[in-house]
Image (cartoon, rainbow, N blue to C red; front, side, top):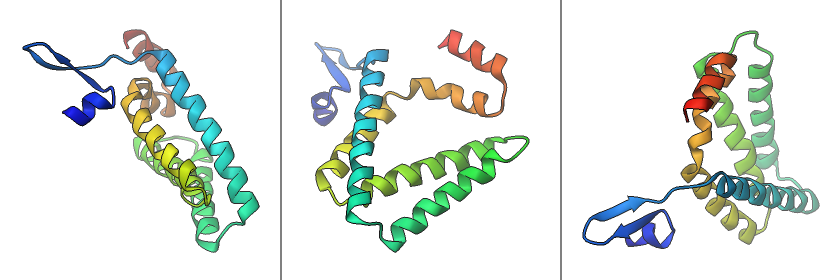
Length: 142
């Protein structure tokens, strides 16, 4: 509990236990911008250091998985899960293999923050199944 409190995820209530801290849209935007900066720096480092064969294979696999999904006429919930896996593989490969331990560590922290700020992702399955009315309704109710 102390580690969660130090990370700013929960706060101690006097005589009542703990409460999960609220997260603002501004917090989410900040994490997304930070991640973009980190990924840009990692991609530049990876390009200048050269791409190893395992890195190339992982990136190619991710791109192939994504293209297969994008070319489908109908997208299922399994496709949504596969897309999330392909997307994670792509970004994690760049960060893992960029050759800069500080960037990789910072990325790990931003991923943790992203998971803490995922409320907006509730709409993803609705969006990917092209149920736009359902997506709008879910956003209004969030």
